[in-house]
Image 1 (cartoon, rainbow, N blue to C red):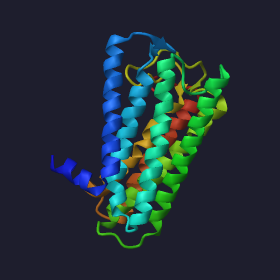
Image 2: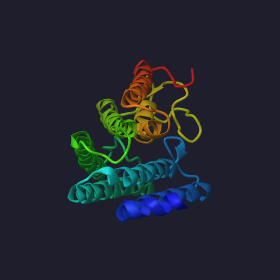
Image 3: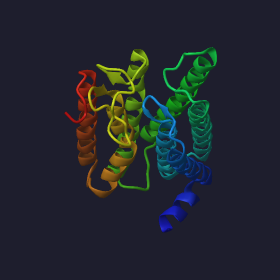
Length: 253
């Protein structure tokens, strides 16, 4: 409870937007129990559920981390760019679920193509915003927190950005499955392919560096050097998952 109070005090806009995404994710979870219609052999509400939960966690993480920057104007600017880009990005994903069609790599109609292109635009705005946030953390010299924690934040954001850009590999293939088609049998909940390489796995690992590396920097690493070593190991782990997927090897083989 004290953590939530502190989180709200740090950035009210991101706090409430993060909770909004969690609530919509829960609604999608409920809809999965009452609506059994499927897209690519999974419940049509599964993808929006995963995206809303994931974005909710990411936004709440940034609610905590942006507090350490010393420029209030930049924090406000970053806050609104994150909210606007993710509100429309997730909104378009759930719109396609409501319409009963896929959101990603969908050019089946002019409307579908327009929606996918708009999603690309908002992801571009989001990615540029994160790059600017990362630059701000690297440029700032003085922090009220330990160096190990600072470097966990800096490198966590950096790995997050790199594996956000990994989505370009999926865009080039116009799918996330390597060696098969999207919609093949998948692991429960994540729906990662059981039979082929799946680019979403490395994407998932890289994006959650945003939480894992700062936590390692805060709770485990005692020095800047240790934080960098932990981050390098985690980065290599995510790269190994990417190579595995590109080779067409399933996650559980």
